[in-house]
Length: 346
Image (cartoon, helix red, strand yellow):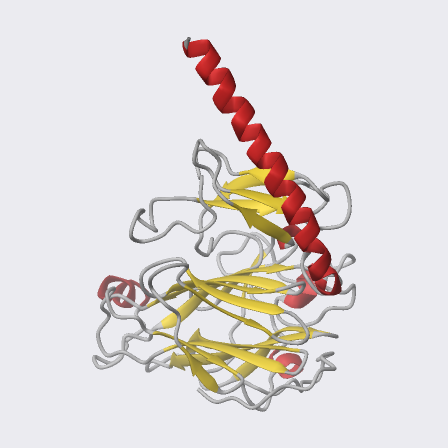
């Protein structure tokens, strides 16, 4: 009897999957206009959970994965773990890749500061070639982190210069992501004393403040004429994942300089400023072979890092090439961005 019951449940599940896949295939035709601008890896339709719990998706992306149903692993059954069911910091999320890879993997939804495309600390980069380097910049300065034909990402630096030093200690306080005719700004608020329960992250879309919900899907999204943009919480406060379809993904966390860190590095920070800043990891979807920027150039296929390896702090120069007039300006000596940005302000 038990075997018959198990067989019936499995058969029923297969029928549901087939029905939903057929329905998804029909609905996918309505999305055909979006295919050129959407990232293939995320071009899918979410199906209702299977009888056994994990989330499933129907892939619309062209190629080998088109029309397939992918199911999240039991180790990470949800694409977006919610704070009312899970602990953000202890649970991995299911990442579905409907590109030619056609697979599902479990990943942490936060920046990995030792991983490719990371920008953390004061500030330390890991390039697309896997080489770690530091970039000085200057407090109050703005620099092109990435500059490509259809994408520009600028960073605003905050910092301090203790007595006796010839250079500033700097951190990235804000990022401006410019593409098409839009500007998305993510910034850390100035706080005198750090409190994990206080949300110090601000988000602005074309100059207007954006509120990221904390319940439900805990996300904000917009469907512009050009492409979809999603900002979703990866922690109750100070953590988000940003997806600009077909261009870039960012995992961002706001953190501050603690007392111990301040003493160890002798930053000599003032008592009324915790120097809240961003830790970020980038994933670029369609970087061109001529991409520029402090980080961007390391994604060129023929790039050879000029930094000195084997030293504690390998330095990358180029401040003169990548300095921009403002956080929102796509202009620098080496910049390539050709789009027109909207107005914005922190």
